[in-house]
Amino acid sequence: QVQLVESGGGLVQAGGSLRLSCAASGSIFSISAMGWYRQAPGKQRELVALINRVYSTNYVDSVKGRFTISRDNAKKTVYLQMNSLKPEDTAVYYCHQTTWEGHEYWGQGTQVTVSS
Image 1 (cartoon, helix red, strand yellow):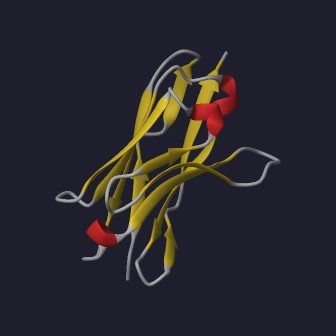
Image 2: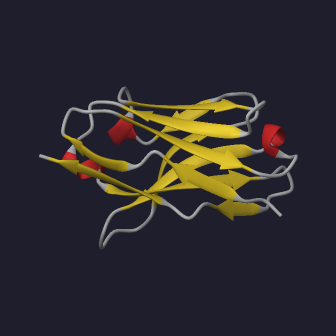
């Protein structure tokens, strides 16, 4: 059973930075695609960033140039470095794992609040 545990959320002023971490259990991390999603109040959950098992990355347009997703397979951890944060980045951020078999797992979420 895969478990994903996020950390690193908090309150930051606009223009500031945060780094989210997601620690995964299980032995399949290195061959899984990992992603960060977010959900703001009253809005649908949206994909923020993806990194696959060969380290290719994709980002939603609104965070390109500001956010960076990375992974450390030895630590079974995926990161989201968020710079130049804006109030519209305020949301609960979720870690997501898709295994090579297509199974999906979610973390419990971590709150990010950006004040203006």
